[in-house]
Image 1 (cartoon, rainbow, N blue to C red):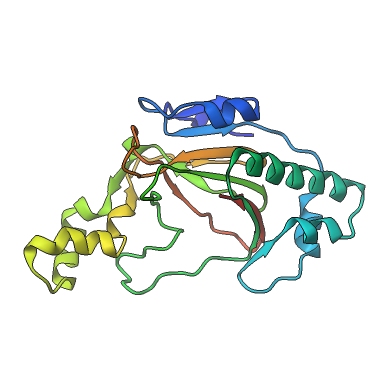
Image 2 (image 1 turned 120 degrees about the vertical axis):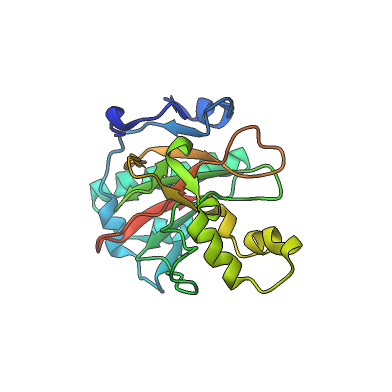
Length: 231
């Protein structure tokens, strides 16, 4: 469950799928959480999947074919049902077993991988939906507790030195390399764990968005493979 002592005003909590998909982002609300306590042993599924790399996608047929105990079967039913209801809603969910994500060391002073606090961007109206069933969950950061990295003077100065083009195109350079999507947590920031089993909708930066995009990051896996649904 989500620790209520670390929740923010930008989160709306719901108790069913219909409210989850229909609750609007408005005002300060840019994250919707369907709080759930799930039954079953999701670690069984992780252990049974044959990994093909750092991120292994598993489809419904493969999930159905896994030899599982009774507790594993309960977990499987939840995964399949989540896929079913999200597909029926028009989303395109995928289930991944994540060993780790690629690290970005192109610019050591400014990594742009998913372990950095960032927002998602899309040219069309869309939300990010995710649920961690096993392993370390993702984190979100209240927008009031994060600062856009490109606005931090010392970082901006280093980016200008890196940039070789005309001044008028500097902002385009920042966008093209995704620098403008990343945030630095303030010293007194309190990141919020998304918890296990909860399904989340996060606001995305798109032309029709009425709220700031939700700042989030992937966790340190701490040696555990994650079982993650995302769309």
